[in-house]
Every structure is written in C-alpha cells, then in structure tokens.
Image 1 (cartoon, rainbow, N blue to C red):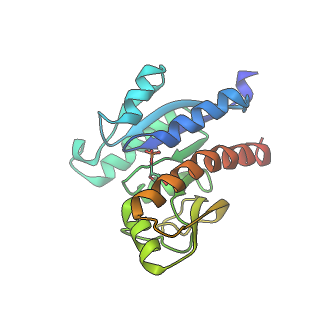
Image 2: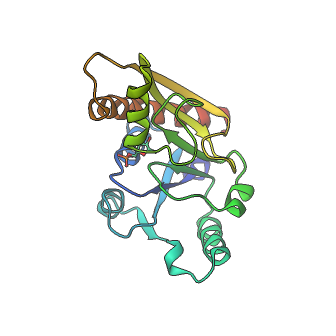
Image 3: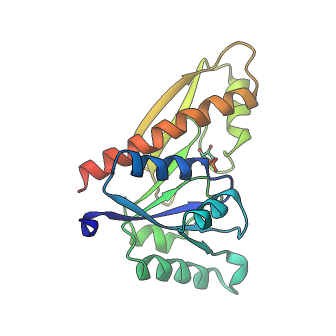
Length: 199
Ligand code: GRF
C-alpha cells in the first residue's frame, strides 16, 4: 500500500509546530502520505531536531552554501527529484522558493499563512508583523490560510481558511497563540482535503 502514499517534503525555518501537527495527523488519521524529508535553511532549529528525532531526513540547504542562486535552485530541484517528492508543504519556511522550483511543481507547493489572505499578506508580512498589523487595523477577526504557492508572495489559490476572533485586550502575542492553535487544526485538514482530491 505504501506505493499509494504521497511523498511529502516539509520546508521549515523555525520551531516546526505545524510540521509536528502534520506528522501527527498523518499517523492518527492514517492519511495516504509520508513525510520523506524536512528541508531547512537552518541546520539547527526545532523542526530539524524533530525530524532527526523521528528518523525523517533533515536536509540543510541554504543559499549561503552556493556561489550562485541558480546553483541553489538546481540543488533544491535535484534533492526533490532524487526523493521523488510529490508535494511540498511550507511550514514556517522563511525563504523564497526559487522560481525554477515553483515552475517544476505547479500547484504542488502549499503554504500556511497566519492571516485571512488576501488580507495581511505579501512581501515582509510574516511572523509577529502580521498579528501587529491585524491588531492595529481594529479587525474583529483573524485566522489562517492554506494556499498554493506561486511566484507572488501569498497570492496563490486559497485551499482552506479557518478564522478566530480578535478579542478586547488582545496583543499581537495573544493573537499569535490563538492563530497558531488554529493553524494546527487547519493544516492537517487542508492536507487531508488535498489528498482526497488528488489520490
Ligand atoms: C506559522 O505561524 C506559519 O503560519 C508561518 O510561520 C509560522 C511557523 O510556525 N508561515 P511553526 O514553526 O510551525 O511553529
């Protein structure tokens, strides 16, 4: 049966709590998928430690290891092809995916963003900046979005969104915690939907 499983790569730069949520969901819900590798621009981070702990390949790949961006893009493409990756899940990956890689995996690269896109997305909108902007705007709800990745930041087709309230007295930090908990439910749900739609 393992031949029917989608081979996933998860790209991370930080804690990796979404990576863990995806990993747990695949096991608990018996999803037809396998996380084959975690790729990160950082050799040491929570996500890479988690991968090593669970015997998932932890591949450190960073622009700084290459003389030219083209070489970096080629190395990333080769790594994906060698491992026969079907789908790439970005989970807190803070680097731009090279255009060559996006072109080679159309609607096969997915990202999670901590706002209700298209609001509070785009270049430079990541991490706490997103939540600070939501609080400053006076919005009464926020949330998270899972979407396909294309050449433009946060502009690819939306796959699924969940929302959370912004409550009186919220700070960027309290909102960030609520949104992150929402992400941990949303990303597995979106993966399950994708796997069902593209068996
Ligand atoms: C999440 O908020 C996600 O939306 C964003 O980066 C954060 C990653 O958190 N893209 P974690 O590493 O999964 O804990």
